Length: 311
Image 1: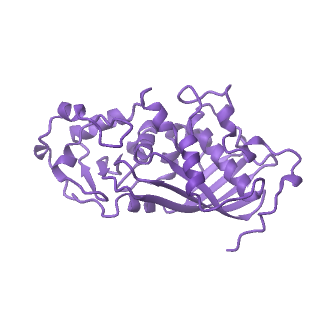
Image 2: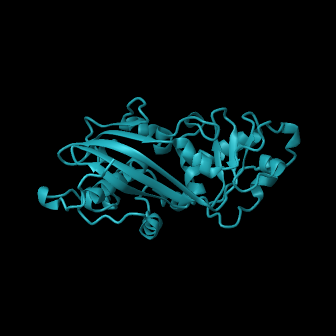
């Protein structure tokens, strides 16, 4: 599909562009808003990585640039503004969000479950059913210190905007999540890229706020890149084989390069010893799984800065 003729600046067509269209950090200045962790997040690292590794450079005020800024500001609000009344990037009365032709989700639903849980379907690596808001953010944000996002092409202009996008980062830390069986899944960091693409069709109002948002992408592509060698212990290790003591495991220092201490047991890893690019699972009923879920469902003030600098 050829992209629309959208590189011509459109500023002259709109008397006054909203700040969330011209500045990707506009809503971060909403000091009067209620923020999930008491203050606006710091996106400086992600913005730097974006500028250094993006594949497209869109001139300011062209449609691709405006769409890119709109979505970036929407993502900040969806992740960090718990009071829907503070969201400036959506048409509140008409907003909905859907993934891969699935049922429409309300903004309230996304606030409740989190942005990751709203877009990822249950699978052998991850399940929203076993991951609350905090857990979902630790699962993905610990793994990738930054996860940048860009618009690649825009195919049509307002009021219905169709565009292709890219989301990318580097797997610097282990992936730890809970799958559709309630098992703990650990994929060892391979230090390589995670790079996914998708298509979104968004209807906007006269203020260029999001109304109906429909997105299509392959959510399993990310997990194929996280663990390209797959799960190595399909036959789950029994509890008797997990000899390591939980308290001893919790006291161990985090691995080199890990900024956030992951204070939960790693019994399965010591038994299975998955290599980089491999994943291992611990059974749903294991004490290790329970302790990990407890740790990941709670975000402490010390973890706050590191978990915020994401997209």
